[in-house]
Image 1 (cartoon, rainbow, N blue to C red):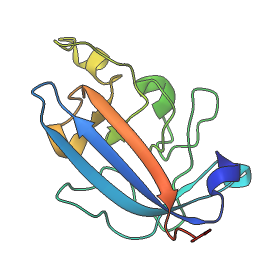
Image 2: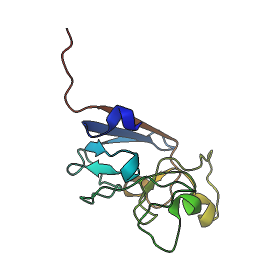
Image 3: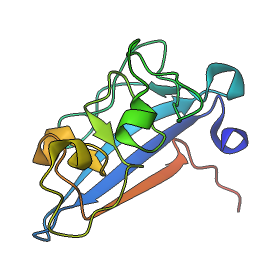
Length: 145
């Protein structure tokens, strides 16, 4: 992934669908760092769309965390282990699009729901989303004709 997007401006577009069939889209101009920055996600400006961002917008960028690479900003917890799945976690609770997929109905226990695929600012804390699609494209498309 770093060879594709490192140090180049891109647009990240994310589409969500809930279990009622409703959908929402959010879009960000981004820059992705390389291995030396733990693939830090630098969001260039606030999100574009009706939905509030659930990704941190720290100027330094948010590194990618996994179970064995705890790069999140929560010092007492490994968010990737606690919530399941690798992601650009800040303090464990705003989004995780690489969590466990739950068929409807979701688990009743909160600690199980926390491990699902969620985007807090759309359907609330730990609502397990039905589908998510992440798309990335160059911010400027070159004309190769």
